[in-house]
Amino acid sequence: MTAMDRTVRPEAVSDVVEQAGSTMRAIVQDRYGSADVLRSVRTARPEFGAGEVLLRVRAAGVNRGVWHLMTGRPYLLRLAFGLRRPKNRVPGQDVAGTVVATGPAVTGFAVGDEVFGIARGAFAEFAAARSDKIARKPASLTFEQAAVVGVSAITALQALVDTGRVEPGQRVLITGASGGVGSYAVQLAAAIGAVVTGVCSTPKLDLVRSLGATHVVDYTREDFADTGHRYDLILDIAGLPKLQRLRRALAPNGTLVLVGGEDGGDWTGGTIGRQLRARATSLFSRQRLTSILAKERAGDFERLATYLQAGTVIPSIERTYPLEEVPDALRHLEAGNVRAKVAIAVLPMGTAMS
Ligand SMILES: NC(=O)c1ccc[n+]([C@@H]2O[C@H](COP(=O)([O-])OP(=O)(O)OC[C@H]3O[C@@H](n4cnc5c(N)ncnc54)[C@H](OP(=O)(O)O)[C@@H]3O)[C@@H](O)[C@H]2O)c1
Image 1 (tube, protein in one colour):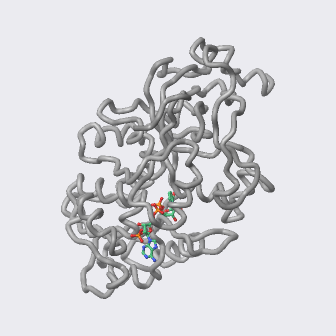
Image 2 (tube, rainbow, N blue to C red):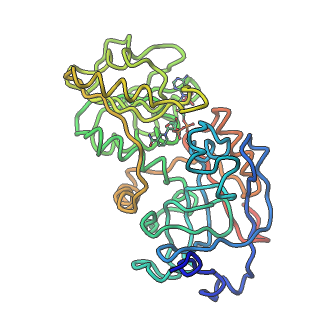
């Protein structure tokens, strides 16, 4: 089978797609750099593989990963995503939309289904998505809410539940509690019955409390390692404190999960060295020091849907931008100003945002 055989041209499969023509509005980037490299253009709709669906994108989410892929930093990621320029010109991962066509190997999804999860090139009117990276959208969620679940919520779930093995009643400390991943981690931990302490900056203390944190620590005024409190589980999403400081705040049998960090330099990024040191230290300690690299799995979106449907986790959206303003959304993220999540609304041409 050739690559062409495996790829299905969207206009050949669906009347819905056919009616609207074969181009779309999209944000594209032809080089790595700041948000200035992003342009809004009309371009060809994406092709999709046998195991993929074509989505009419209704909303997209913005996350740190998209910012890394836009800037091409750390440089290590260019080995996978394109040495000189991004292999995929249309950025965007987190998505919610309606299935308008399905590849021949797709089972479980049909034209008209409303879904959310991860797509290739979500900052566009149409995007291809692997059927094993999407799930049915909970009916109670708007498309914008469903779109901002994406990588952030999956990471929080895997860090807290799968790697951190959180249990009801445990004392859990979460750094980066006001960010994308943290906003889900705080809510999930509280929903599971943990007693949550969230660490963030002064203007976001109220947000973190409102997400379900029982205690908050303002890192601009206080170092949580000096408070005398010990935690059964620490999720280090912000990635700034030294390992020794984190261990000092960890109970003797506690678990530390390293999730993120942005201060590790341009080549390999924040956490590789720390992760290796943590795992080596763990060999000689009662404390379990570990890290995660989140996996994009449909099953985890289904697990999250249970919390989302029940309303125990509610995507927290600070602001919604129209598609053309994706560069502004990424500038807002880069400046560190986002409170939890921002969404991108992808409306049909001629529709104005309310
Ligand atoms: N391991 C994985 O698989 C995985 C998956 C997804 C993301 N990540 C990584 O996780 C990290 C967080 O991602 P995100 O999407 O949540 O980012 P985000 O939305 O930009 O949030 C960043 C968080 O870091 C906090 N922060 C910034 N400077 C700080 C400082 N000096 N001290 C303490 N906290 C500080 C921010 O708090 P304030 O805004 O209150 O200052 C905010 O809560 C990133 O490094 C990302 O690359 C890893």
